[in-house]
Image (cartoon, rainbow, N blue to C red):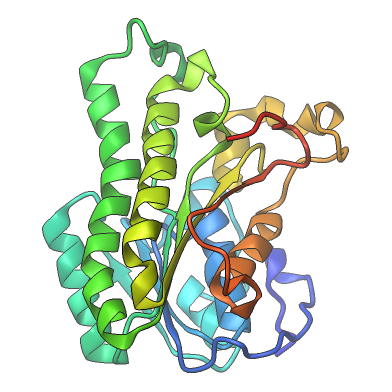
Length: 277
C-alpha cells in the first residue's frame, strides 16, 4: 500500500478492500483511462486482469509506469494480476480470454469495457461523408468489443448471482460533434446497449452502468488533440479531467455504493455537458 503510482511519484492513499475476493477484467488497460481503472480496482482489493491489444502500449505515448508493467503496478497492492494480450473486437479472442481468466483466477466478477477510441482522422468523420471502412472499424473496436465481452462474461456472473459491468461511452455519445461522428455513433450504441442489458440481467444480481468521459487529459488524447491542454478554461469546473476522475466513478459503479443503481449513464465532464441523456 502507499505505492507510487501516478507518473511514478504520487503517493496514493489506502482504500478499504471492498472488492477483495473479486476478479476484474479491464479492457484496453495497458495505459490511459484503462490503466487508471485497473489500478483503482487493485487498490480496492480486486484481482485484476489487464487486457490490451499491446500490453506495452504505454510507451507509445510516453506514459510512465511505476513498475515494469501495469500488472506489476497492480500486484504492488497485494492482489493477483494477469496480463492478456487480445483483440476484443474479435469474438473468438474474447471468449478465449474469458476462459483463461476463469481457469487461472477462478471467476470473472467485474468487467470494465474500456477498449476503443477515436482512431480515425477527425477530418474524415463528418456524418455525410464518413467512409464505410472508418465506420466499421470504429464500431468494431468500441461497440462490438463491448457486446462481445459482456456476452462472454455474463454466463459466469449469472451462475454466481452477482456481477458488475461498467461500459465506457463518451461525451460524443451525448452531444453531436460532426468531427467525431463515427465515434459518436459507436458510443451512442454503447449507451443504448447498457440500458437494455441492465434490464435483462438485473434479476440475476448483475448491475450494468456506463460512464461518459468528456475532455480527459490522457496521454493518447493529448497526443491526438494537443489543443486540449488549454481546454480547461472552457470547462465549468476550470480544469481538464484526469484519468483518476473517471476511475472514481468506476469505483462507485463496482462497489456497494451503487447497489441500487443500474442502467445509468454518468457524464464525467466537469460540467461541460449539460444536456440530459
